[in-house]
Image 1 (cartoon, rainbow, N blue to C red):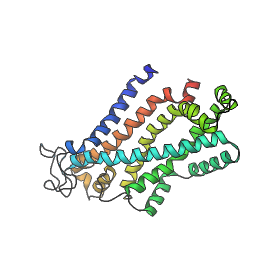
Image 2 (image 1 turned 180 degrees about the horizontal axis):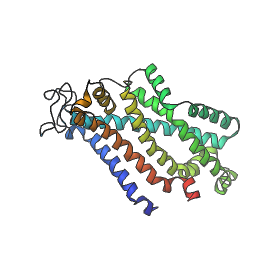
Image 3 (image 1 turned 60 degrees about the vertical axis):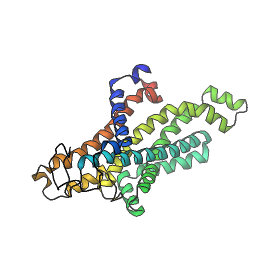
Length: 277
């Protein structure tokens, strides 16, 4: 396990994820300007005063990139926590109780998995209204079926293990078995799902913001990309180099960091990988 955790792929993913977290945490100290204030003339080129220049109304692009990390990571963490809690609860309950409970839960999961994710997100977000809280709830409640199916598969396997059967035979209740045996056993898988879920949530949040379905007053990487692309003749100028490109790179690096970290941790935390490796 130590060798796997020390692999370059894990270290690189962890470094990108840590960098995003530090930028989000210390945004007020890193950003030289308020991201909403008019910090200079419109379309000012990058300089010592404005590291990434200014946008079409004179806002400092670097400050917007820095502050954009905070809502992106906050919403991604919130959505991933919600999806993990709901998915683990449904997966464990379905795998342990079986019967009608398992049948109904898995049919609900199948329905969610059969519906294209992004169109459903767009529809629900449009109906719910542009709000950061709504985005967390929508993304979390759309993502939980993936978690539930993975955890259920693991719970079905664990239910047949000797230590679980022995615990039940000695009078251990369902709550005791879950807390004492199943939660520690599925813990590594849940950590893996949570990390990968952050990457997906970051991408979905940026996608919804780009489509104009997030809070229009918020500082968001997806909203920065949207506003840059609607500017007429953007690519006939050099503005895209400091207005559009940094926002796209921020989204890419944020998603890449957590995704690479998840891929690197999978050989350690995913029981299916260990069985087939």
